[in-house]
Length: 277
Image (cartoon, rainbow, N blue to C red):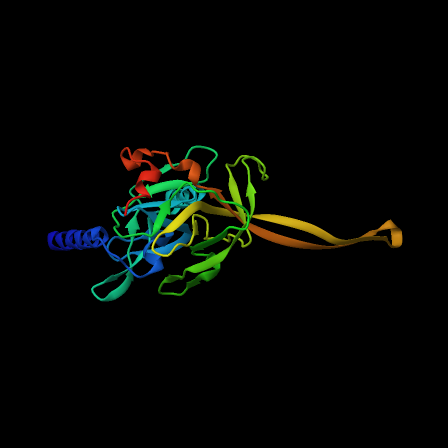
């Protein structure tokens, strides 16, 4: 029993050392990762996908959507397991997903649906936060892990990344989108489906990308194209309605949080962490 305990402890230390090793991976998945509930210690099993997160700075700090963390920790209370990000790296000449356990986290002030959390993971990231003007027609990109791209087999859960490229079609002031309790937002010409919550909304610049928002959900717009009603036998009514439903992605503006200093960042602000090179 004692030898097995020592072996497990050594395995945990090796895993932690891998997470803390500074890397410069060519994979997009090394800095945009899925958030999952998992079980196990060294040999982990991914049980379920809850959303997306992205690395800021270089010392294991991620941003995501608040409701993603709320849901995963609610599930853990009910079903057990742990919460973590699963970035991809090359370890011993093999491409692997690392289980970066969520160590500490904090929610942004109301009404933001944004959260920050810390891990032992170490990697470089191209994301920076800058104060810049963003207007309608601005080209933007997002990437994350939609539930529609998850494949479950008897052996494992395979989660694949998907990228979006589009533009901002509406800048929404605080309180102007139903329901009204929200900060400034961007409406996108592509939808934010299940699993993409917490994705970065950014302006592609090459070596560094300017993050301007955190993707949170989709807003539905319904337009009635045709409506017809007939009264048939015994005063029964027959209704026919043809409508068009559109979904537009919503991302909350991250720039107002540039001076937010969560307790888990030890006195640093989000802006300071995201200016690290």
